[in-house]
Amino acid sequence: MGRGWRGRGGWQQADLPPADDAAAWFAGRLPDGWFTGAPEVIVDREEITVVGTLPPLEGEFDDASRAAAESGRISRWREETRSERIEIARQAEHRYGRKVAWGASLGGTRELFTHLAVPVMTRLRQPERQVLDTLVAAGVARSRADALAWAVRLVGEHADAWLGELREAMAKVDDLRSQGPDLS
Image (cartoon, rainbow, N blue to C red; front, side, top):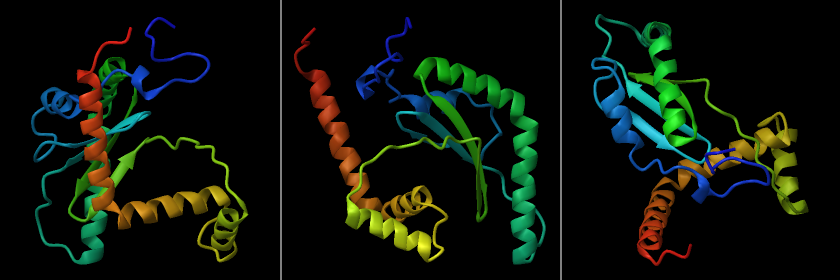
């Protein structure tokens, strides 16, 4: 084991190395010219996702052609930067104890590469299961798992401001907790 943040019997979020400086670390570590500005860095317990905006396309495109050109440019960037991204991810994984996923955006196109789909176990009572089963029966989702993921995305889209405030409040609690007495 050795590092203290992995092991049998589960883990707690406090056992993970802090990733408060991840956005700054990536901003300093990424090669100049990859993105038009600082990348968006999203951190959770399992993964760090780095998404940067690529320089705009030159030339005139209709809507369908523009989407194809944006996707093609993102694909080219993905291939051209693969070896460097792997090395940067390896360093970040060592530093932060989390997998790193990459993505790029250009115009109206946003693509993520090799990001995790983490299983989440939950217990649902019959009324909640009926909601999922209705989504499956209606063809909105292929399975209960897909229906649950769909519902979580929907809540995330419609509760963004509230979730942001909740995350800020949690960060303040973490700050206060770290300033408290050392109980070890």
